[in-house]
Amino acid sequence: MWLLWVVGGWIQVASKRYFISNWSRADLIHAVIGSIICIFTITNCFFLFLEYGFLPSLHAIAGIFCMGAIIALFVSGVITYMLTRFHKEKIWAVNENWRIAAKIHTVIAYVTLVLCALVCSGGIGTYALLFLNDVFLYKFAFYNFYTVCGMSFISELIYRCWRSTKEKTNYDLNFQINTVITEK
Image (cartoon, rainbow, N blue to C red; front, side, top):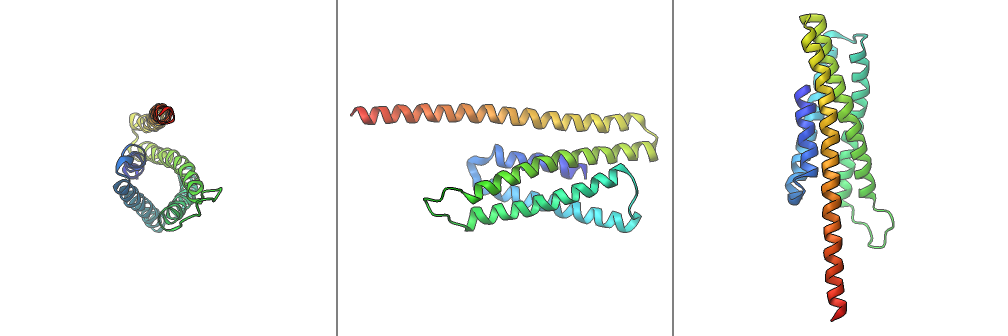
């Protein structure tokens, strides 16, 4: 589960953030990896529930919230994909439904990534204490969660700075082109 959510989650973020220059492949990678993460998580939780039943622990309770977030994430991703690919809005439309759906999907995705990383770290920590009696692994699991949150924050910060610099450069370039055109 940790590999699915931490490594797979980073592939998800990277495919939509940093590989956008080849957006058709980025969308395919994003959709395939996202579907794999959702399907494996749901089937794994289903089989764990069949094997052990519901264990009254914080990890299991938080896992239920994760399942709800995962389902909402999957549904919002499918809706965003369908609106992006098949729904053509009128040129004069004020609201762009696909952008609204994409924003909702992004917010749900970040909340789900952080929540699932916390639940995975909690599962590792619980397993380390209850079955291995390993305090170091318990602490490591939560340091891992803090690292994932820090990486998410830094990645978002770098992306926002890069994007704003790129938009400013594009704005300046467009302004210069328009100035030259109007002067002629």
